[in-house]
Length: 183
Image (cartoon, rainbow, N blue to C red; front, side, top):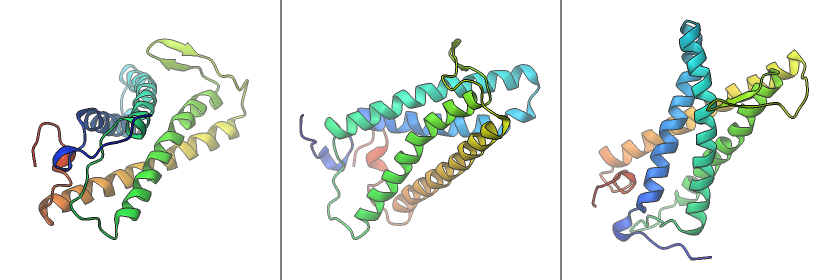
């Protein structure tokens, strides 16, 4: 296992940055598509549900890649001076990643406990659970929805904190996660 390195000028490496923004986009799409598909007529609603499942599967792959990359090869953006909030920030990121990782199987189980196959890019993946009761389906659906709202709340706090760092504290926290920007 290679040791992780500090990024030059306090920046993350390009793969970490690209995976971060891919995951951010997919999480936002997942949330918005699920929140708004009921407002669309059947063909568009079906497309949003299908894309939600397919891109949810892509999100699962991106999360696994992000975790593996950051654990073994990714660079760490070093701060000039550690702050007393470093531990809180690390716990916050750990909580956000944990909820995201939990959301993926919850999404699979939501579809399967509703007694439907998971449709991933046209490949139907049948439920390994057998037939589930309506109450079970509703419970899993509710847990999936609540977790999604918590994730979006945490993602909103994460984005707001980055903007505060950039516009109020005038430091490098946001810039080090943007592609193609220097210090």
